[in-house]
Image 1 (cartoon, rainbow, N blue to C red):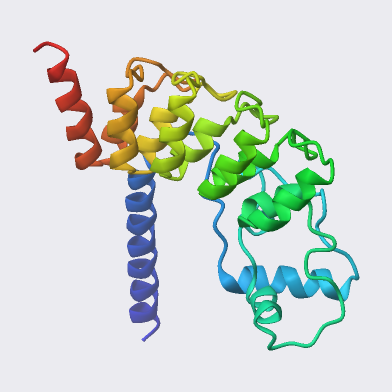
Image 2: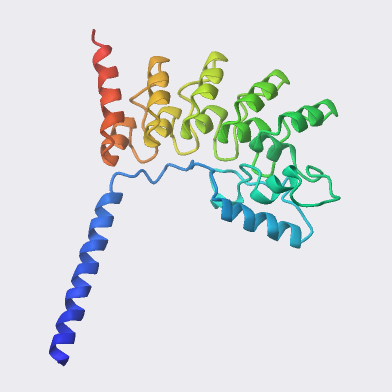
Length: 259
């Protein structure tokens, strides 16, 4: 009986080793230099954050973090269920809903009316948070196109970058926000600008599998030969991922250059 148990344990260990090896193989080709990630939170994470904030008697305020560096739940991306219930009148409250929300959070959440009021009251549209992020960068990172358009019309500088080199075009491309990418390209943003690790908007769009954005960037002159600090170009990334669709888009573009 003991021998049977021992053999079973060894078999389980072998299976676990093979599983780990398989997962390790899948991770090959993922560029360590890529920093940006989709700043999207689960409803539960957002609810936990909102409740904790209320219990502690404080709001996030200007202490919002760059969506390129820290944990996903630290990014104020959209109104929580708690906030939505307040807006619907399902929860009684005597506290003004947006009293302690910063300009950056308003932009991230697409609160256009409150953004307009804040700017008209004299708030600096290019005000930086603790990670050198502007309201425009937050709006681009969260796909808030009306907020992006308003902020630009209000004088937002499209060329300001965060503390890790993340600019508006990188943010929008990373998350596949085609409309915002189009706006920024029409304003002649540098299409080949990189973050601190050498990644371009094309790399982020391709790595995220955003086919429409990849096509637009290629058609607009994005450089496919640029390498990041891992010595990887955009084709290296998609091949490493096994993303055949984006690979074919890039290959067709390369062929078109010789026509």
